[in-house]
Length: 161
Image (cartoon, rainbow, N blue to C red; front, side, top):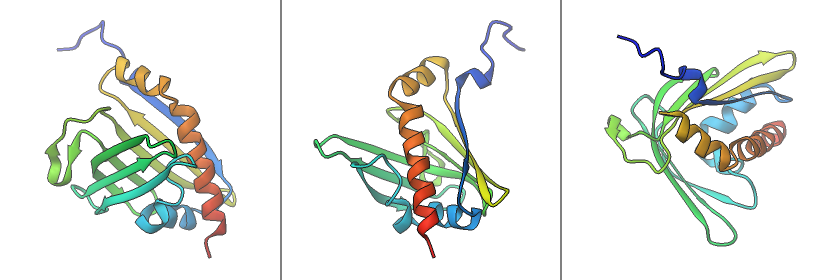
């Protein structure tokens, strides 16, 4: 049974696609090593503590961000799918071992990476359970914040040896 009045699933998504001027191997490395991830993960001057990083389906993914004014953002979650060098899927709706969570902002992020010229096509698709949650995330500064992080990722990956 379908609901003809229901919004399309895509209307619940926020998407950013950018060509990063860094090789995919370096972008992947910056993403897949928690010691590297914490160096670019959130918009500076905020800092990131990686509390859990078990990069496999069902593995814990937990970042804790702190701002210079004392503000914090605690983000426990779970990896759902990992395709080395190509795709990372994580969610705030589940914790390690697929245990249900009660997130403050329910979302699933699908990050894809592909070679494009001498750079990397990096796409972040963030899916939300409904349009209201998508709108809330957008109004919180999704495009600005995630865009800043992509720039930081690009600059960081360029510097990796």
